[in-house]
Image (cartoon, rainbow, N blue to C red):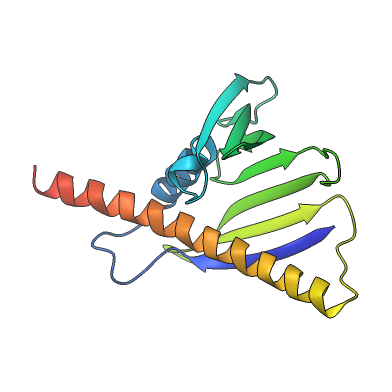
Amino acid sequence: MKFHEHIVRASLPELPFRLSRAELAAGIADFARHPDKYIQDATGSRIVAALPGAPEGGERFEREISFGSLTFRELVEIRADGSCRARAEAEGARPGSDFVISIEEPEPEVFFVRFTYHEDREVKAESVEEKRFLELRRLAYELKDRDVVSKILDDLTKAFVTAAHA
């Protein structure tokens, strides 16, 4: 069941370069491989194993991402179109979940990044506290995702400036 979905604009007028789909896709792939470089509270990540069955032009692997003593294992698939999917199986009280990132281009060279979160259970809140918790969780996802896009754009800007001064 879809838990949350939102988009973040990646094509910003203040960028000193014209963003391409390939550059944005490469940034998303780097995030998929090294999420600890993009998520503030992540303390580490590693690719555990490359897996067969990758889509043409893409990758498929198992990774771990750590937040202190808490570690999640996920199956990650990166597609040639720049999209990425991470699947975490259910563990204890935590349901299985999917996290999907995709690039949208509603106009030529105008890019948005869509973030979609799914859980293997119906997410419902009955009490005021439960509703507040779910809203805070959604806001935390959005903040994290904006930070990810911002870091991708910052890294691309640094590379552009370095190349321009070389």
